[in-house]
Length: 154
Image 1 (spheres, rainbow, N blue to C red):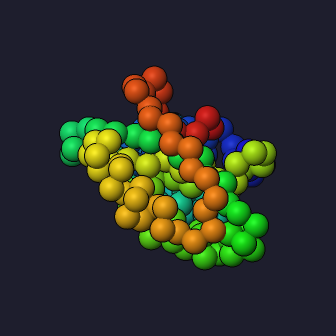
Image 2: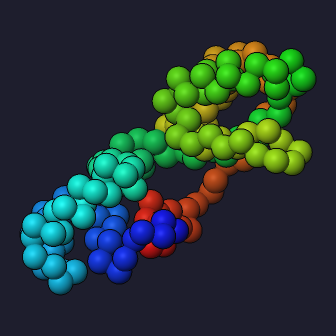
C-alpha cells in the first residue's frame, strides 16, 4: 500500500471505488472533510496515478456476453522470443478483458468474454489460434461467478 495515504485518503478511495459518480462534496461529507481539501486530495491522487480513471461498469450478461472463458496460453520457443508481437495481438482483441504473464507451466492467462460457446469457438479459430508463436491453448469455461469486484482492499 502506498505509504503516503492517510485514513482520509483510504476512505475517499473506498467510496470512489463503490461509486465514482459521487461529487467531492458528497465524499467530503462522508469522510469528515470540507469540500476543498477533499477535492485537492482527489486531484493529488489522480496526478500521482493512484486513481487511474473513472469508468462505468456494465453487466456483461445484460448486454449479451453470457460466456466467460479463461484461456491458459503456452508459447513455443519462437513465440517467447516475440513476446511484444504476442502482447500487441492480444491487446487488439476486444474479447480479451484481461491478460496476465505467469510463471509456471503456462505463459499467459486470458479472461475472455463472448456471447456464447459458438462465438468463443469463432474467436478461437479466427483470431486467437492465428497469433504466431502459440504452442498450446487450454480453455476453461466459467460456469458461474461467485465473486467479481473491481474494489481493492484499501
